Amino acid sequence: MNRRNDASRGGINTFNNSAGGDGVVESSDSDTVQITAVGGGGEGGVSGSLRAGNVDEKSGLYVIEVVRDGEKKLEGGKGPENPKKKVYFFASAGRREPPVGGAGPEDGFWKKALSMVVKYAKFMGPGFMISVSYMDPGNYATDVAAGAAFKFSHLFVILLANVLAIFLQSLCVKLGSVTGVDLAENCKRSFPRWLCWTLYFFAEAAIIATDMAEVIGSAIALNILLKVPLVAGCAITILDTFIVLWFYNADGPVKNIRWFEFFVALLVFGVVICFAIELAHIEDTPVGEVFKGYLPSKPVASGNGLYLSCGILGATVMPHSLFLGSGIVQARMKEYDNWHANESTATVATEDTAVTVERKYKPTLQAINYTMPFCITDMAISLFTCALFANSAILIVSAATLSDTPEAQDADLFSIYDLLVENLGKAAGILFAVALLFSGESAGIVVTLAGQMISEGFLSWRIRPWLRRLITRGIAILPSIVVAAAVGRKGLAEVLNASQVTLSIILPFVTAPLIWLTCQAKYMQVEDPNGEVLTNNEAGVEDGVVRRRSVDMSNNWFTCTFAVVVWGFIAGLNVYLIVTLAMGNV
Image 1: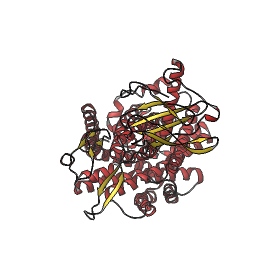
Image 2 (image 1 turned 90 degrees about the vertical axis):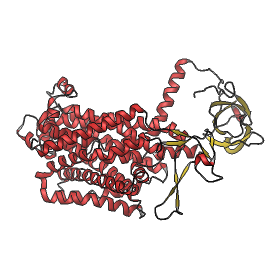
Image 3 (image 1 turned 120 degrees about the vertical axis):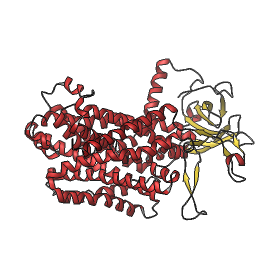
Image 4 (image 1 turned 60 degrees about the vertical axis):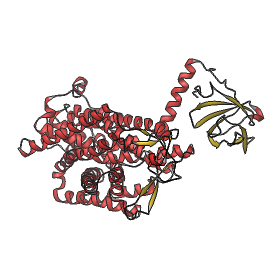
């Protein structure tokens, strides 16, 4: 473990403990101390896991639970000089480590690297859930159409969209971490009612357009694999809701949330594996030409190429994923605060009465500083590996099999399946359909979750969770059934592409409040437990309520400027698209 000097003590401190060895202060700040008990081995050794105990203010002694001779016992010892500090005690049996140095440079490097990997592994999960939004059936439709019509040129748009997605999702993680609530609830707290209703309208429209793509994609996969009629396939996808009902509860045990994330991650890996196999079977495709597609080119910005570029942008940087990304990071911080015995709640007044208040969890500064970098890293790695690979693979497979063929003009998910079967064999077509089904199901699950966050955040629904999820899923699924029945197989490709362009047009309306909130210091304040205690007048609170100075965690000027530039680029692209459509140039 890393050891660093504590300036208040002049170096690493040791102290005797009754567990049979010396304690080594691992790290400390102004209100916490981490200590490792280094047992002498034999009967005097201590074994156990991280425990937390408070130091008695009068005696300076700590009391902590350890395991000795197979039995749990309470052990005591002399704590740090400052009796108000909390003690985090690592029990380490049968070995004695020197307080300073000890391990060689190489051992220290590998121990640090292993420690970082283990820490990161604990935060894996939310990134996979977010990445699902970037590899759903809507992506299939736009990537297939772009690959068939323009070969590899739109790989640049996929890369650019992923970079923009990582930046916007990092803002979502930051907003959800600092405020403790998702984007929808932040909007409700911060904006006037008329603006909240406007934003809710766009958010709900985005959910319907997104769910339409997930439902239709899953229905197509079921039709290919099991010959299930399209309308029936759309209806079957409501089962996604029950998976969410069974597993996911943001206020429930973290263990259940991790199982939910693991299930979604399995579906993501299933998609990646399917396309890795597909790419391995493609022949006579120059690698240099493929990588050249990641460079800017004229086809992506003119005519139908621009229309497809906007479709890819809308399919990749999906509005609902911003609500999702800001609403699934709190579980890790809550786990951290519970484990370290930190307490932080926010009192929120309800609309119904000025007296009724709601006590909500609000992450502490320690939890934010510790978990937020890992959450952003997890999200960025998931998007830049799984999502980028899957979208690129779809377009490459489409370009290799559909371009320069008669079917390219009317390319859709059915036609690429037929061509894969014809050119690469039945197994290749089945793999494509399985990947499509995995994408549709996993995306349907997370969009149900995002729909719930939007309804709860904007509308403050006070109905049972299972009923709320059924209603939000029903609102989104009914249009899909109507569309499938009305247009049939022939019109589904156009509907899918149109839904993704719709999402691209909605995107500026959703990103604007995200950028505004994260750039405003008044919304991005976190109380510093070590900060100066404010007077009642300074804090604006009643007598008896202690408030400390807050830390400003809003975006710096560079991030704010870049965020505005990104928003302007997305908005300008959509304005240009709308004008082009109105002039009939697409």
